[in-house]
Image 1: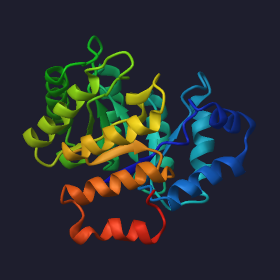
Image 2 (image 1 turned 135 degrees about the horizontal axis):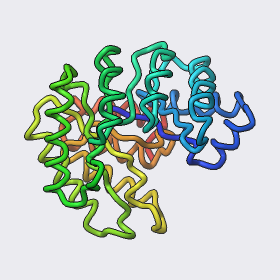
Image 3 (image 1 turned 120 degrees about the vertical axis):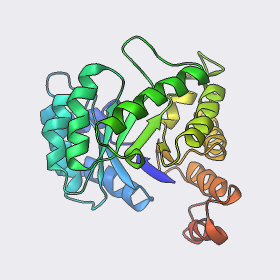
Length: 264
C-alpha cells in the first residue's frame, strides 16, 4: 500500500501560517514525523497562495528535502507550477494531479513523460464531476487512453475516482468503492488512490469514517491513499486490512507494526 503523506498542505491553516511566516522548523518537523510514520511520498501543497504559489511551494520543497530522503508528491493544479518545480525534486516525484481538462493535460503530461514521473489522475473533466460508479469508470477509461497515448506507462498512473463527502452525498463512498473495484480489474497494472479525508467532511467522529472507508477500499483493490500516516488508529486499520486481504505475506508488516507500537 503506497502511503502519500497529506499533512503539508496549505489548505490546513497551521500549515499555511508556517509557510507564510517562513517557519522552516515547523514544516521540517511535519516532514520528519510523516517520514518516520511510514510515508512513501511526502505531499507538498501551497495552493492557497494565489499569485505566490510557485515561490511558496519552491520554498516548501527545498525545506522538506533538507530533512528527508523520501520522494515528494508535488501537488498543484497549475501546469506552470508543475513544470517549474518538478526539476527541483532530488528523487523522481509523484505529480498530483491531472484531470481531463485540456490545459492540465497539455501542460503536465509532457513533464511526467520526460521525467518518468508517476502521476495522479482525477476522474473529472471540464464539464463533469463524476458521482456515479459508471461515470467514474468512464472518465478513468478516457484518462487511461490519453495518458498511455502520451507515452506514459500504465503502471505510472494512479486513478483517483474522487470520493465526495457522505454528508452531502450518501452514495458517494459506495460509488467510489465500486469504481475502484472495476478500474483495478479492467486495467491490469494500473493503480488507484484517493484523498481519504474527503469522505468524512462535515460529519462527527471523522476518523472513524476515514478508517472504515479505507478498509472497505482496500478490499476493493485500492493500493494507494493520501492520508495521515501518524494516525495510529488509521495506520493499524490499514495494516490489518492488508493482512486480511492477503496483501501482507505471513502478516509480517502487521507484526512489525505491532512491535513498533503502531497499532491502536
